[in-house]
Length: 437
Image 1 (tube, one colour):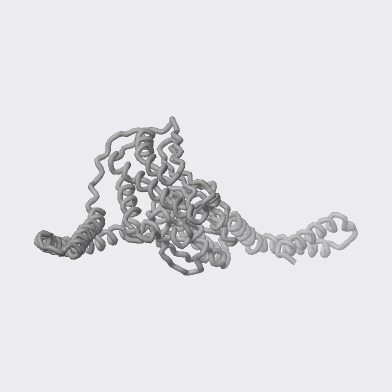
Image 2 (spheres, rainbow, N blue to C red):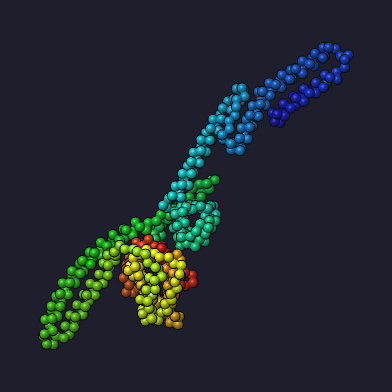
């Protein structure tokens, strides 16, 4: 039985005695009347003390419980002038002060963390207990290359982004470096924090492209310069000597075979010098001198230049220009060279595929899209997932006689133009090189 119930029992007893007093027969002795009246007064005093000492403090404590239930940490309880109850009230008020300060501190920390996550140069993706994306910051959206509506409430494996698919393969507390087909390199980490007693997964994405590209460039520049210097100096001396011997032997009879060997050796030395010079040219790419150019005109000029090569390999070159495309700031010479290399790679890919499937015609589509996008599409042999991760790496090539510097040149020029680019074979079997300003 609750304490208030005891109070109500005594109150009902008091009311009953008062009613009994009213109906007491007049012939009863006055002693009975006095005893009953005294008993009523005693119960009344007891009820007043009971109310002030127990019921009122309990009501105050009950109000405090309601404040806790409503999470109203700004209100406080007043003293009830009862020692034990006032001790509870003081403890309760101190607890409310601490809860209020803790709640304020947590709100400030959460606000700071929200600002920190939004402004972080690292991508942050938080998923719920079902591994569906519940939160991500602007940098993560940029790295994934999709809109926020395409990510919220979805599994990472269902998001149309190569980086998201790589993240979906990560195991708990795993860190790996991912190299994508757009020349970007990311350090990806999967970790978790405890929420409601359960581990809550989240992903950190750190872009390492610039640092690794600078380290790569510094390394291969040093190696190329050293090799080019030694090879050119050596071949120059050998060529000069062979040329002198060749001229001397030409005047001698029956030396034709030896002179022919000398000539082949000289040509081979020149080829070696030209070969190493091409590598040296990669580290001598000039800084772009940008100016406004019409993207459609640049594409048309490159298409006219590559028509001959396409016809020679029986490849149909289609041009589709969007009239809404805006002018872009580019170094026309460097960018035209990039487009020439891309189309040349597409033609060579088609040529390799034709060897296996001669019946299918080769086609290349070069198109522009508003506001400032260029895309080169071909139906060549395609790019395997294994090769995709190695694209744009220095000296990597799938061609038998390839040197692995074409895509490096493209990467360097497009990076200096601050373009977003990617090279991949899509589900329809077409290979797309997409450049966006």
